[in-house]
Length: 241
Ligand code: BTN
Image (cartoon, rainbow, N blue to C red; front, top):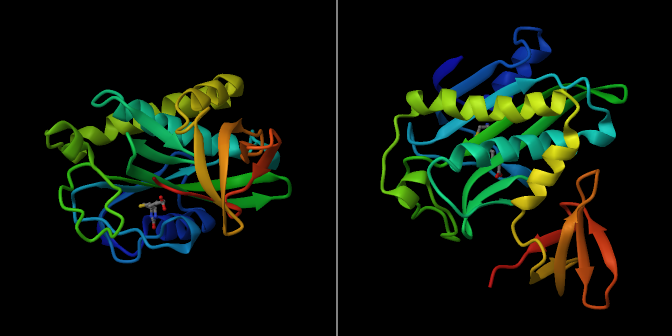
């Protein structure tokens, strides 16, 4: 479903799927969001018609609640594989941000509706910077786009099937029970794996080395004293040099 403009594709998808008006695999895409949402209650701003701004409805009823991080991993991997046709040095920053070198190129916001211990449906919101060249409105400046990285401009309507195909490929692997291969591949592309870096944990700066991600999606960090601790997204913040 294409909407020239909307509040948020995640909001529209959530409402339509709740009312039984969207099936598994439905995609809502827009040129412009007036109330785009990012992770942790942030807003997601994009330049009109320049980037991918879409939501995919998925019904991963084959996943139990404790396995739901696999969906996040699969989506991040699918986007990575799409980008890999054009650029190298693509990293997944835990849990599911997409980076080229150390600049953010895309983000994912997954909103799940539960039915007992299963996920009835997931709305997978994806914002991916494609043709935007001016990021002066982003205070950190730590962002990029496919255009800035390649010098090419992209026809979004032509690119969309390629992105969706890569998402579908990984999702179908997951559905076919090949979750271990998804975990292994995710780990291969995890930003900072095995590197000593500084993180902010409970307001304190702590040196640690990412050892991987737990089955439930927690970040596993080896601290200076050799202890391995697991953190969820609210407990740890990345400190950039
Ligand atoms: C992040 O904070 O990194 C996640 C950003 C997710 C943005 C996308 S854009 C399409 C969909 N609709 C929204 O309101 N948010 C997501």
